[in-house]
Image (tube, rainbow, N blue to C red; front, side, top):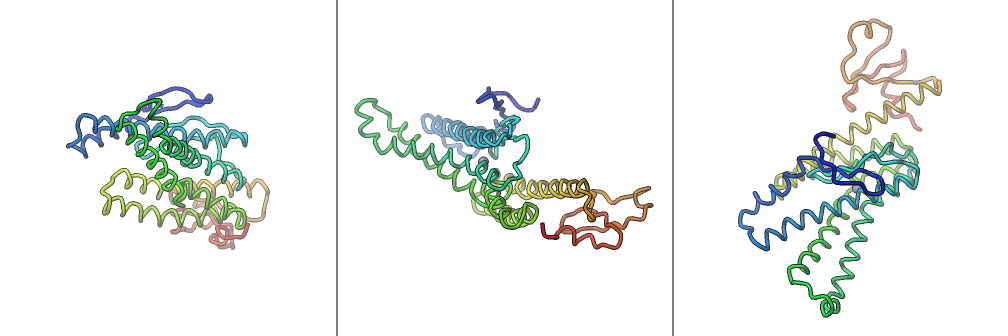
Length: 285
Ligand SMILES: [Zn+2]
């Protein structure tokens, strides 16, 4: 936590900002050297306001999780967005669905309120005069919130849309198979996102986010494999697998186990004698 600065508490959850976050205003200044005066102030206020909305988005996830008895360790802002660190992920598909949907729902609500305000701004203007720049600010903030809704709902696991997809697939296919499919789709979308960010938009934050999505999904899948293996082992089922990041050496390989390289998942798999390891991965739940 020493690399993060604490902003305060909301609903008993600590809100932090990672030091790299301060690169964002610097990036705005660097990429828009022509900005000055009111336009510069508008751009910087907009960056702050958007990240304020990101905090509210993360609180949406955190409070939805709390309803299902899941606590949130903290919320941290990074240049590529916010992260609410939940104590655990719900393993019930509908709970995961509502927790994932709650974040974008907050931004939709903000956009709706801003839209309502702007629609009646002429009438309000007669009571409380707003400078034109203020109206421009609120209009842009509304569209940026709509952008956050659309962007977060892209089904690239582990982004919100990907979690919604995983939850819906899990209803029919089980959690493991659903995660495999969601992670594969997420990896394809991450590559497209990275290419679009790099080639079309020249947006390096987008490239960072794409790299994060590409690896974080696989990491979560690997963790799920481990938990699943443990669960089956504890249940004393007649099948189990263990995976290793490093090739087993020394006394481990001196036992009678057979180790296979699973290139798809990038792990060594300990095979129970006489049963092919791969079948464990894809066995129906
Ligand atoms: Zn979210």
